[in-house]
Length: 83
Image (tube, rainbow, N blue to C red):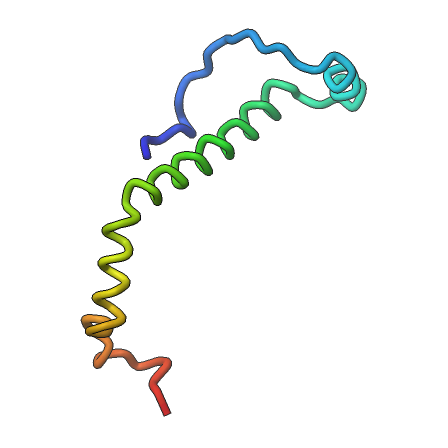
């Protein structure tokens, strides 16, 4: 996923619920910053949701291999040893 934290800002037009917008302004909220932060969270969630779907088969094959063969360096672990 490319870096989005440092990207320049761009003006856009949004249509928002007028009552919610009025309340946000009365509360002193920075609407742009709030929408930006929430949109960034949703973009990240959807990105990883799509990534997981696109890589589902590879993940399943990897998990099956680990179940079958165990972790590659498990014998060198110094924690979580079976009793």
